[in-house]
Amino acid sequence: MKKYQSYIDQLETHLFKNDESRFLAQQLLRLHKETELKPNPLIVELGVDRGQSTRVFLNAIDGKQNAKLISIDIKDCRNAVIDENWEFVQQDSANIEKLLLNKPLIKKGIDILYVDSLHTANHVEKEIYNFFEYLNNDALIFFDDIDSGPYMSKQRKDSVNTEISNRKIFKLLEAIFRGNMDKIDFEIMRGSTGLGIFKKRKNLGEKLNPPVFVKERNNAIISKLYQKILFKKTYRHNTKSSSSFLIDPEKNKE
Ligand SMILES: C[S@@+](CC[C@H](N)C(=O)[O-])C[C@H]1O[C@@H](n2cnc3c(N)ncnc32)[C@H](O)[C@@H]1O
Image 1 (cartoon, rainbow, N blue to C red):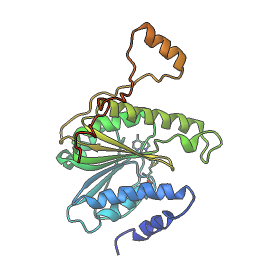
Image 2: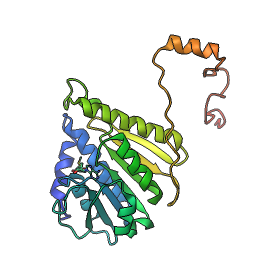
Image 3: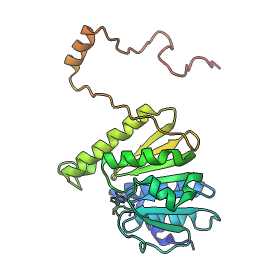
């Protein structure tokens, strides 16, 4: 039996529940599935605590010849698990220079980066910008806790600080995506505390462009007035031709 298999089995039983535990199980099992699909991945985990995600990754790489999980936490988590495929580093997860001195293997390319340490937009921004160039093509970056929904007023985890922090993190991910659409794909899993998933579409060494924040419009009347004054064009769907389609569906008439 693979290591920590009983935990994976337990997660699988939650996929059939009607409560919120289903969404947590979906998130963790997605990490598991993507890790299993990689032949010999180098995984870097930011944030260990009691080793919930650590166990998921270690189960998925159990039996793979050259796979490894390097986990980082600011506190001493060296006893969270005992596993030959696991290396623990106690340090600030955003300090890439220090990490590279200790673990130069990272320069050869990370296949999975799991971001679950200090949940502030500022820290997450440092982590993603510092690690991105060390990710291989097709590498996945998972961001835990990006949904403010469960932390909003009268919700299961009602907490104003986390609600605001998670919203900032989510807006940051959207802004990074906006500035880097040629470099990353972006997916979101919802229902639990949220899992953001970036897929890198560029080679090792490629860096991220700065995030692009766009001001939200919340008042249609004022916004339209402003557009008129500035002669700004607004998008209209063309119903008479296919010019509004990015990929013309009428080109292939069979
Ligand atoms: C949410 S927990 C991680 C949970 C873990 N991934 C799991 O699934 O069980 C967050 C962890 O991040 C760590 N942490 C907080 N600030 C940090 C920092 N600046 N650098 C590295 N780790 C940090 C905390 O000590 C804590 O253990």
